[in-house]
Image (cartoon, rainbow over all chains, first blue to last red; front, side, top):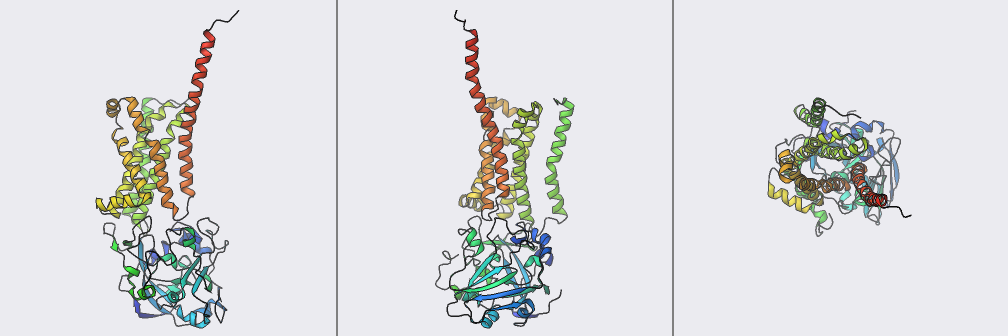
Length: 267
Length: 220
């Protein structure tokens, strides 16, 4: 279904958006299978409505919201972000949502809150990939509170002018364009504010390959491939050289979040 | 027991040759009809890698199949199957050299040195080259049967390297079901050879003893 949103020119990159067909048929969403064609085939069983999302932990106002209430918390904006996958490919996607900071101010974190944890749905009946030994379920992602408060961090309900397709993380997901794609949790059912750094899914599965921060960084290689360049899906032809990957995926405005940190150590 | 006439064998070989080219034809067709998906290079890389391993398993199955069925003729298609291992491995490697590194050999070698999963894959491919080069009858003659056979036993090293390459590729995603399957098949194929060899060695001295006993005159 259509989802109305006002474009926010402050958050629109000039890159050409990826074809919707590519963005909806080439997905990493292991709850529906490990092959990138799997989510588009298998996600039909996901029921994105009715949906509730619980916000709890170190907050003064814990709450459980249904999807409609959550969507009305702030005006929906359309933003065009680059998306860089840790596997070395990228896309450009027009998302619809609002800055996650809107939700943060609503629930009022306590002084103990240092991190935010995002927990995805893990329902075997709706998600055939749950139970596969690849990851621990549910899928958990996390951010430092100041990262979560950055205006770029988008609580997302739609893409390409419509509500999110199931395979893209319906009905609500995060989009963090300066981090590798897997940091953006999909089909979120719980958001927890915590004192300690969350144990995130990929970091637990392979800590030497996936750090907690996982900022896009051309200078820190993945152990099995270089992160210095990427292939833009649908745009870079077969015979084109791969394009250079930009620090923080080109979102240099987040750099101050990490000043003084050794990003080779905290990769 | 099935024992094909020369004519039948030619027919079998032609059929296998055509069948072995189907995966390549499919890739070519998909490339020209835009059906390689959102990331064509990844599709081609994975597909050619998979088919290298399939043909490796098939080639390694020839000797056990021959022993179990006494179909001696199967050995006559082994060279072709082995060359298809090399064919798909070469496509796999070319995709890597071309589309990942744009023929920048120095860059590619850096990658090979730096990343163990590429190191072992590259080693397996390089080791395949002498086997492909010496696959002709002329080369068998020039090397002499014994030496040729020793050289071609390199495949017992290449196969595990190929599996390891695939294993490490999948390691980051904790997705071992396929590497385990390939590993078990290769282990079974190599294990069978080992088993028969040991069995043969055990039976040899026993046979010799039995024979001696037979010729010895019985004491009265």
